[in-house]
Image 1 (cartoon, protein in one colour):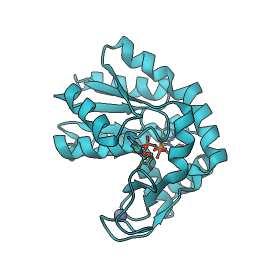
Image 2 (image 1 turned 120 degrees about the horizontal axis):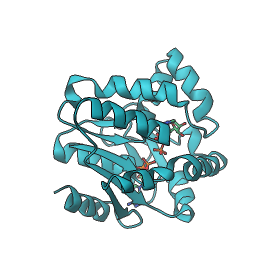
Image 3 (image 1 turned 90 degrees about the vertical axis):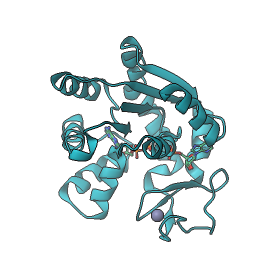
Length: 213
Ligand code: ADP
Ligand code: ADP
Ligand code: ZN
């Protein structure tokens, strides 16, 4: 099963993608996580990506597409995957599409997690991310058992540099300009499914599993 998560930054794509990956035994592929791992390890890719991410801008398509195609070519992606944060532009979606066509396969579902802009800013200021394993929490909605500490691995939780309010505003405007058009792209292909992302995360997940079967 090949699934794409669509939605604004902070809509809950990562939260849902992790649960989908577990339930359907497919890898969770997040371009944001790949970039952050590279930043942490000080790679050249990480240095380049960081210069865009810190401003709330998109990493250029050419670089992003290369990273993503490398990742989905790996053995564990053979039976499908859930893409979180990719594609984010029409050219990215077109490259993915032509790659899948070459392999005689296709996207099965594009799930749009719908959350209005008003809710996003609040969500992001409360988001906390694990520096080691990438798990995400929310200080009000999804608190860790011990404040500031990851439940899964015991590492420190941080507010991402790009989750500061000014950067979030820029990311939202980039989302509306460049990513939202993908809703029409996947709708035209007949694979778009909308879910209400403003409800409790388990209710969002139930709506998604009803769609995926
Ligand atoms: P969020 O989970 O809040 O949507 P991500 O972790 O997916 O954020 O992405 C963080 C940043 O990484 C983005 O703001 C962008 O700079 C970069 N990024 C991630 N995925 C892509 C992509 N597909 N194309 C371009 N840039 C990307
Ligand atoms: P995205 O990957 O789309 O950027 P995340 O999954 O990281 O979004 O979620 C953004 C923030 O909102 C996180 O702090 C997360 O814990 C929280 N969150 C996720 N889903 C919900 C929900 N249904 N209700 C309230 N908060 C949520
Ligand atoms: Zn952790």
